Structures are given as structure tokens and as C-alpha cells.
Image (cartoon, rainbow over all chains, first blue to last red; front, side, top):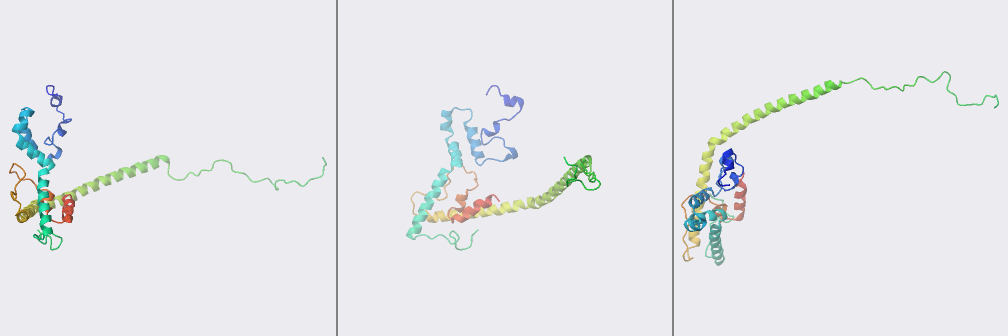
Length: 106
Length: 142
């Protein structure tokens, strides 16, 4: 409860560690999107949802992209399709180490 | 009822010998208390041996770590160089592939921030055959 902070009064940590990704972890292992989440929370905390949606859009978009990687995959997908198209038309041959021949570099 | 002697089955001359019907468990071997003491003694001895062996194992493990930890910056630097090299190659390949696509910015980051993010396996091995990606996925955790 917000006004009776029982856990802080008794100094125990029953469920604070799984509320957000950026919470205190044992052995200090950070989450993959720790930085983005921290930025977003710092931006959006204390102001209302309606305002936060407008003002913290950049941080939120980055956070969601870090988790879901939709834009990254879409970008890779476009490159792949273009590559397949060019390879079928014969205009592009990938360098030998990208196919199975040749020695694997680097 | 005749007094004639009928041939009957009688015991042999002189009675049978003595029959032993009493318990005849041999009093041999250790007593109960001493067996218990032997068992507990073996347990305690083995516990002590295990403790000693674990400590020795820990010492050897520390020695292994002491060899590994100073080399970690070297390995990390190598991996970083390799990753950057692969990203650079991918960037150049992408420039060649997407030459004719209108409105494509080569190497455009999908994020609004300029922070360095560790690249995904897909970003590194995207243009390579599938086995390399699978192998890299396995090697990541070994």
C-alpha cells in the first residue's frame, strides 16, 4: 500500500524484486533492457498516464523495441527479401564466406 | 492278547542318543554395541575425508580461476573486435544490396538513442548460412 509502506518499515523485500525489470537483482545481473526501462520510468514517473503517453513516447518506443525487436526484425526482413530477389535475378552474389564455401571469416 | 512276542518296531539296544532341542545359536562375531560403534566411526571418518577433499578441490578450482580471470580482458577484446568487424561487413553488404531501393538509409538505427546495444545474433549472422547462427547460439552459452 502506498501510505503504509510495510516492507520498508520492516526492511524486508518480499515482492519488490519482481515488480520491474530494473529492480535490485541478486548478483547484480542486469536485464537486457534495463537501461531503456530505467529511462522510461524516470521520465514517466509521477506524471499521469495521459501526459506520460505524450511526453515519454520516445523512451517508451525504445523500450518496447528493445523487448519485442519488431522494427529490427522488419528491417532484417526487408534486407533478406531484397537479397533473395537480387540473387534470383542474378544481380548479386554474396561473398564466399557468407555462403558455406570459403573459410569462415572473421 | 497272546503272550507271544510279536515283531514290533522297537528302539535299538540302548536308547537313542540324546537329542538336542535347545537353541544353538553360536556366540560369534562382534556384539551389537561394537557394530554400532564401527558404523558410526566409519561415517565420521568418511565425513572428515570428504571435507578435506572438498577443500582441496576448492583450492584447485581457485587456481583454475586465477588462470582464467586475467585472460578475460584479452578474450573480451577479441570478441569485441570480431563483433565490430562483422557489423562493419554487414553494413557494407547492406549498402550493396539495398542500392536500388528508394528511400533506404543504410545503417539506420531503429532506436532513437545513440546508446551502444549488444547486437543480436540475427544482426551478426543474418546474411550467413543458418548453421553458423545455430552454432553461435550454442557457443554463446558454453
